[in-house]
Length: 200
Image (cartoon, rainbow, N blue to C red; front, top):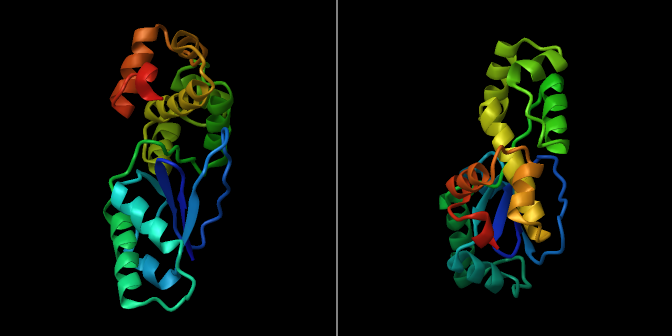
């Protein structure tokens, strides 16, 4: 059975038979909408995150009042709207896919724990005992991002956590290993569409 986790402003689609856990950085409110497995074949086969539309929010809110598992024709039409919204929604830039190779996992976990570490890719490769070309090729194959792109995303995910704690933008930039504040703001705006100061 698929699981649709709906926080206040964004939603995460988790396909059936996929091990997962939910960790919250601070309190949030939301719902979980479960989709029967036979209906999941038309939905994405990998996890992803979207921004909640008004239509999706209202359809989910309406479905929360349903008590009978056998849907009426009107309820079925609303359920179909929910499925359509999941299937057609563009992906939001909040995911950080993890690699599978144990050597790459070691590097990824180190970068998450120490996002300010500016070692170059070949230095990380030597640290994890993997050839630089292999690291580059497998990182892209297993995460969909180059090593540098993945590291930037890891830093930005951490930036969101720090911003939610009301940490100053300048402090965040240097804590994450950026050479200057402008470079951090530019990367943040490129990814999320707004400056970090306006995000929240």
